[in-house]
Image (cartoon, rainbow, N blue to C red; front, side, top):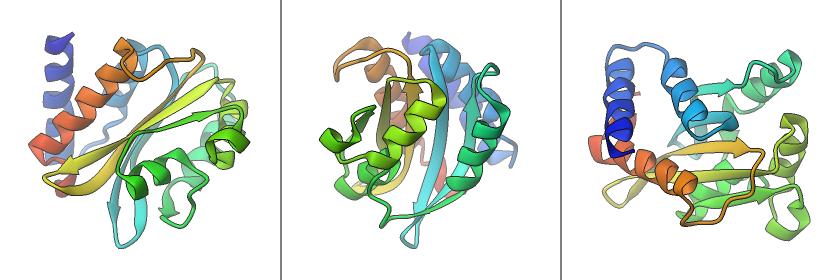
Length: 168
């Protein structure tokens, strides 16, 4: 798994340095973790800006377009989304279909539309500063410590260590 994570990080860095789309790399991560949708956002000026988003082909095209547009730029005041909560609280945020329990009502709505059960948003740190977030939604319920979540966490940590979001 470590080899796959390293390859993903090399490909992601090459895409960002070359000012190319990161979607093929996100698609690779999505397949590896058997997810429904995945996205990468950078953070600055109290806004999350989408770097890339990818969803499985069987997902409704309109839903994919709506989410991509809705999350193109997200104000950090929109704390009903896991991607924002992860940035604001500086810890991973887990969304479920029960938004009233997690406080992530916005994420719950999208999970329903994605036909997913859970989302996991991991903040990306460059040193002590949060610079972005990597998030995935899945049909499976995972716990922190499960291989899927650990893999996503390692990828997010690698992005921060390489300081590749600062290029975007």
